[in-house]
Length: 115
Image 1 (cartoon, rainbow, N blue to C red):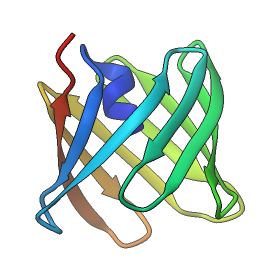
Image 2 (cartoon, rainbow, N blue to C red; image 1 turned 45 degrees about the vertical axis):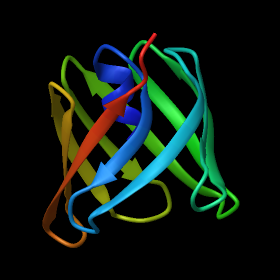
Image 3 (cartoon, rainbow, N blue to C red; image 1 turned 180 degrees about the horizontal axis):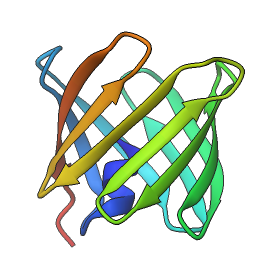
C-alpha cells in the first residue's frame, strides 16, 4: 500500500491483506519524489515519481499506469486507460481502499519497519 506508507509515519515492511488473510513482504524506496517498491511475493514492482502529493506510477511488469493523489490522510487515484477509480484513507496503521470498479472496500494493515 504505497499511498498508506506515503501518508503516515513509518514505512511498511509488509502489508496484511484482510480479505485474502495473507501477509506480503515489501521493500524499496518510498519518498515524496521517488517510488521504487518491490513486492517480494509476486516478484513485481511499482516505480514512479511524485511532486506535491501527485504521483505518476507504473506497475512492472504489467505496465499498468496509475495516477495517485494524496491529501492529508486521504488518497484517490485512477488507473490510466480505464475508468477504474479508487479512494481511501489511512488511520494509524490501517489503510482502507474503495475500488469504484468492483464497488467494494478493501482493508490492509501496514506492518511498520522499525527504525
